[in-house]
Image (tube, rainbow, N blue to C red):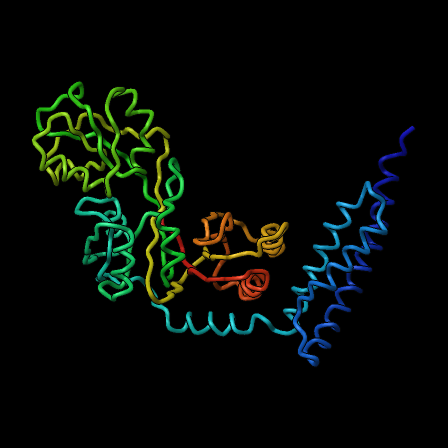
Length: 383
């Protein structure tokens, strides 16, 4: 017969008290260890020592609880390292950096600014830039790579680029270029995207045999396009606005473009079908990047790039640090590391106010478990 649930819970509460008291004693010892390491100059992390502890714990644990005991003590040692880091003020450099950024940052994005966008007139990036800036001076570049290069050369102060779509997913090329270029996200903007199918004046839907647009737009409308034009060939081009311009400059009545309503007016085209996105709520996130980190008032989102050790549990360790600070992980994206087979960089978007006092401690803790760590910006997102 099973024991009474109430009595079992009382016994668990007593054991929890014992565990908590032992945990507090252990954390107090960790602070003493930090002082000893400060005097000796030894690093906080000692991989050999931790492996020895986990091995000894496994030997003393019955097989049925061995996995759980290893996870428990691995987490306790991680918390111990974080406590030692705080005791040694490992986050001091981050606190100083944030104080410096806050002191030199803008209060608002400038009303008039030179902004780089990928594509041509009528691109969705242009619409995003016009939401972010009152009167931007927009320069267009043919590829994402050339847009980042323009920012590097100082031809513009900001660049506005799509980073993610609610239907088609991440814009991988932009993530790869964030990895390559030294820049910072200073704002993001979430915009509802509504595509239409456009062609030469007088063309009929039944005539269309080829549809061109950016690959993301084609992905967002794939099912709708198949229903409308089951025999039409879909072809990706550099940009939705570039697709509309190509149709306008062509004499081919069987060619159509997928893009924004603005493009129909800009390029003198007629709408064959409207509101074509497959998902009811089709949204794209755009990021505004700068060569200088700007932490504007109200910033509550932090983007990071981490290269983690290529070993079991490395990602879990980073995620458990985020969870330990009670922070929401808004986005996790992995991208291959060039030249390293099946190894990845990870992009984290965290929901945390930039003014939160323990943010530097969180960043220092994540940097400590990373082979490479980059702060990509603290910013707010407009909707």
